[in-house]
Amino acid sequence: MNPTADNDNIAADLLKGADAIADYLGMDRRAIYFAVSKNRLPTFRIGAGVFARKSTITAWIAEQERVSA
Image (cartoon, rainbow, N blue to C red):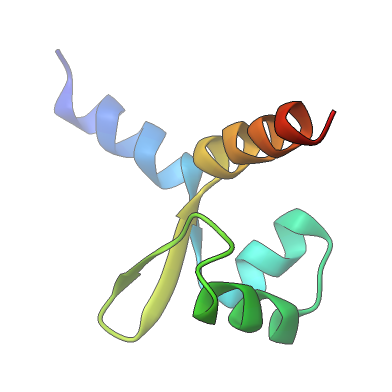
């Protein structure tokens, strides 16, 4: 196991901040903050920062589509 490679994978998967999450989802930053405040997006906080994983958001979207279908 290569810890450096694992960290590179995590870094590539990580969205740092509401702006990065908004860009990834094609949404407005304010909409991201609202969704986070209502627990409507799979995010986590480190201090005051909002973070999300691309892989988690992609899986969450697929689940939302499955439930809605």
